[in-house]
Length: 256
Image (tube, rainbow, N blue to C red; front, side, top):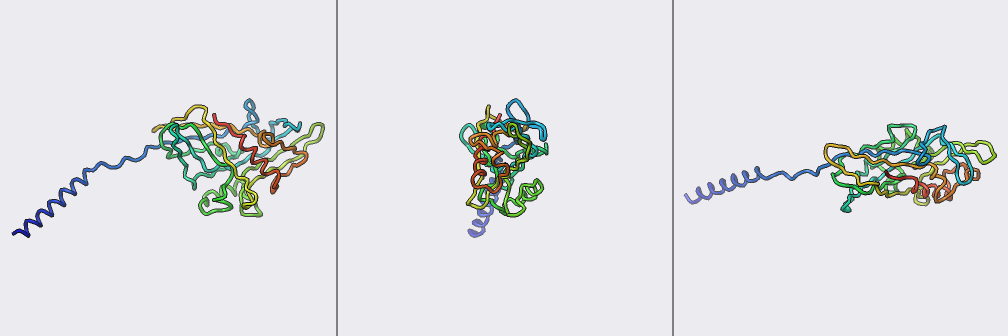
C-alpha cells in the first residue's frame, strides 16, 4: 500500500510541475525595426553630382569631370545614446554604391534594435578578415563582379572606382582612372569612418528611420592629400598614391 501511495505522489508531482511549466510566460523577443541608409554623391554641399556633366576645379587648377563612381561600403555599426553598439550582421554588410544605379544608393537595414542612435560607422572597402575572397561573403562576390569591382587579374576587390576626364589649366582634356583596393597585407587600403548623426535617429517599431549621408566627390583627390592628375592620372596598384586616396575617402562622408 505504501508503495502505491508513493507512486501516486510522484505522478501528482509531475503533473503539478508540468502545469507550472505550461503557464510560464515566454521570454519577450527584442523589438526591432529598420533604417533606410541613403548615399547622396555630390560635388559640394550646393552641387549634386551628374555623371558625364558636372565638373569641379581642384586645388591644382584642374577641371575634373566624373564619368564613373562606385565604392564598397561594409561593416556597418550603429551607436545608441547610452553607448550601446549594434553591429549589423557582417555576412550581410557588404554593398556596392554605384552612382549610375539609383537603386544601389539606398540600403535598407532590417532588424535594428529600437532606440536612439547618435553615430554610424562603416568601412570603405573589404577588411583583411574577408580579403581577398572569403567564404563568409560569397553572397557579395557576384554583386561585386557584376559592378566591375573585382580585379580581373587577382583575387581581390576594388574598394573605389573613380574615372573621368581632367583638364589642366590651359591644357587639353585627358582621361584619369583611380581604382583603389588592397593587395594582400602589404598594401591594405581598407579604411573606416565614424560619423555623428546631426540629430539622434530614433528607431521605433512600425516605421523606418532615415539616415542620409552626403559623399563629396572632390574630396577623393583634394582633401588631406592633393592629387595632381596631370602627374599621376592612373592610380591602381600604386603603393604611394593608393593609400593617399584611401585617406582622402575618410573625409568624403558626412551624415545629415
